[in-house]
Amino acid sequence: MARGNGDYIVTITADLTFNDIVDPNLLYPSDSWEAKVAKFVSAGQAEGYDLHITWPRDAQVVIDADGKTIKSVTSAPGKR
Image 1 (cartoon, helix red, strand yellow):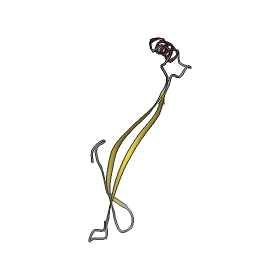
Image 2 (spheres, one colour):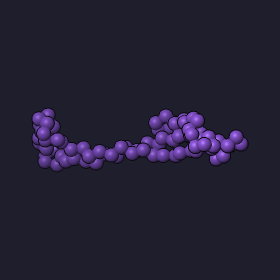
Image 3 (cartoon, helix red, strand yellow):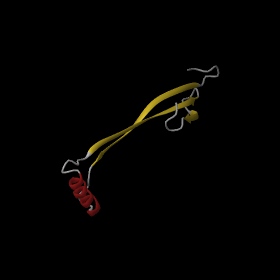
Image 4 (tube, one colour):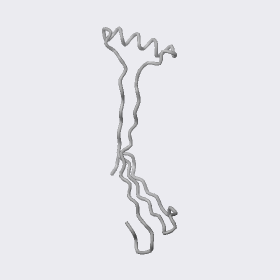
């Protein structure tokens, strides 16, 4: 959106996503032991899983006529 003084306001609406595969790293003794316990407790059905966490993170940037950022404001994590 253009302002009367030649500045532009750019609004960014974004969703950020953290992706991870949660599974034991058998190079670490604690992970190896915990995997064995999980297999025993779950009667052999314990297995790794994918984890996806998404949250909104919006921003508003004011850019002058020369393309330089004058001001940048971001929302708090999880706020719109």
